[in-house]
Image (cartoon, rainbow, N blue to C red; front, side):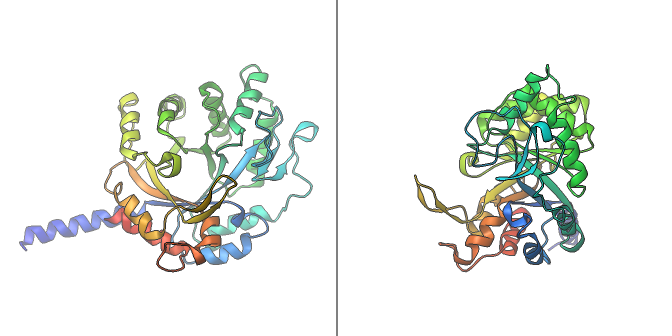
Length: 337
C-alpha cells in the first residue's frame, strides 16, 4: 500500500470515529421503564451504550386500549393505560395514584446508565386518537391552545419530569396540519424540543410541510426525525425523505437529521394473527446496513426495549438468547459498514 493510501485510510478512520461519537442510538421503551419496573431495568441498561431513550407511549384523553375510537375534549394524560395527569375539573393535577418517585428514577437513567437524552413519545397506531383529541381541543378554543387543559397539563408534565428533554410526535391517527403545528409551537414555547416519528410514505407531505412551517418560526426546534422503516413503514428509505425536505427547504441541512430504524423479535398474540414478528440482531444489522452510508442518517432507533426483555431469551429464529447489547452492537456495526 502506498503511503498516501495509508494516510487516506487513517483520515477515513478518524472521520468515521468522529461521526460515531455523535451518532444517536435510540431505544423506545414502554412499561419496562414505568414505575413498577424501572429500578430493575436501569440495572440491565447499565453498561450499554444507548444514547437516547424514547419513553412511551403517552396518550391524551384516552389510554392506549381504552379509546372508544373518537376524540376526547378532555386532556387527561396516560402512560400507556395508566392515568398520570387528570383532566376535566381536576386539570393540572397529578393522579392521586401517581408514583412521585418515578420522575427521579427516570432522571437516574442519565446519571447511572449513561443515557444522554430522554424524549416522551406521544401517539402511536390504532386505536389511539391522540392527535384527533389535540385537534378537537384546538378547534374548541377558536384555533388556539392558550389557556386550554392541554396547555395546563403539559406545563405540569414538564415540571414533573424535568429529565425529559422533548416530545416525540408519533402522529398516526390524524394528519391535520394547523392543530399539529400549533401543538408543536406550544411545546417549543415551553422549552421542549421536538422530534417527528413519520410512519408511512403517504404522510410525507404532512411531515415535510410541518417541518417547513416550524423551521420558518422556530428554526432548530425539530431536532431530528425517527423514521419508521419496519412494519407498515418497511418501504421507507431515509434518503427519499431527506430529498423531500431539500425540495421544499433547499437550505435545510439534512445531514445526520434522520434516524433509520427496525424492530426487535417478538411474538404477536393477536386474535387475528399469532406468530413471530420483528428481527433478530443479525437481521437488524442487514436491514440497517442499507442505510448506513446515507449522509442524512445520523443513527438509528429500535422498537422496543419491552420486547427484548420479554422475548429475547426465547426469540425464535435467533441463534441464541438475545439482549439489548446484542441489538445495540448490530445497529453500531450496521452504521459502521
